[in-house]
Image (cartoon, rainbow, N blue to C red; front, side):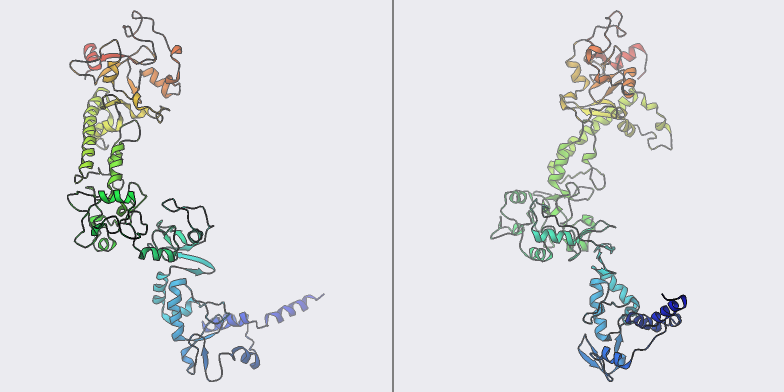
Length: 562
């Protein structure tokens, strides 16, 4: 075994050996003026024979061979030696290589055969300048930096490491067709979503959104071909119409139906109008070139942008409309949204709002849309008037929020009434009726599984109930009063549009003692008209029963002024 002194001497000798990597590092540090490396790692010059064997292929005493231009240069000022590998190249060709490679890969590899070195950033700064290099970096789309594949978002210029996924050969495109093997593999390798702005694009050709179902080459050929403006399929032979505006419509039945609903005019700019048939004023041009020149008329919406209602196809893929708010959508999507009305049992008006700006989607240029909006407005006005009267009857007009100048509901009785009160559409008379406070809705577990036939207003319900007054000569049927469904008391609560509660029974329901789940035979029994608190004969508890007009009863008893 070596002693301590022998081991130190052996290590010292090992440090003096001049491997090529140490020599390259030394030369790089020497050119940058880093003199500290001299003390740590003194250079040992190789022999003349080794130096000659190393450079004899491309350098002699009088000239240097550039492997980029394959010419010998006698003027050594035209030559640049790479710091990492010392391979010489002429500066002119090296600059051309930088301008060609940086936008693609954000780095430049040594072009010498078999060499794996890269140009240092400081070298690139000295050759083309720092500003020019950063401009080239901004153009970089995808490449390899420090061994990682890098993607570059075409919209926000964000860069990140892109990792190819595993191909899913059962994947389908937007139309439900199964992807080919090449398309599935291309999707796994090149489809990316920007982590900053969420843009979905192809990292290879920068197409936005990603061309699912096509490779880059296939998509380029598809773009150049003649295809249907609706289904996007290639058109073989003649189209569905001889009119110039519909020359790019195939004979598919769905496409023909869309064509019959579409505007048949060509705009002054020469592009197709994507509006609907019979519109009084044509839709602004959705062509990308026209939108770039003037994005204001369409809110920067182009023909390929998704409809904000269906989010399944572009606004140019079907006849579209521009409501008064200015956000363009499909006519059929807007009509279907209006015709379906509110999604649940309680009447709400979010369905008639634009999904982008939340303004009412009024479009008087379309008779069908205008007719639907008129019915919706009539319902809204009816509810607004009834809600204010009901607010006073329920005593909510004395709420502190209505009299607090700092509150948003200060002196705003209409908005507060619409916020606090729930209204439902009667299944029989098709008129809105009061269904209780909105705070009651969270208590009802059966709110999701409701039946439209169960939603009956007090006026219609009183027609089917025997006993008591079912109509008031002064106030009509809107304020018909009911007994509690579960005991012999006057109901103060009407919840879910179907059930009347008195205050104690409503409190039990809210605390989890669900009265609506108790069987009828286990509810309290009435002792008869003489002992009943209501002093009337009524059906057994568990059934709805009308007591007559609430306003008249209150005025007569002088209990609650109205």
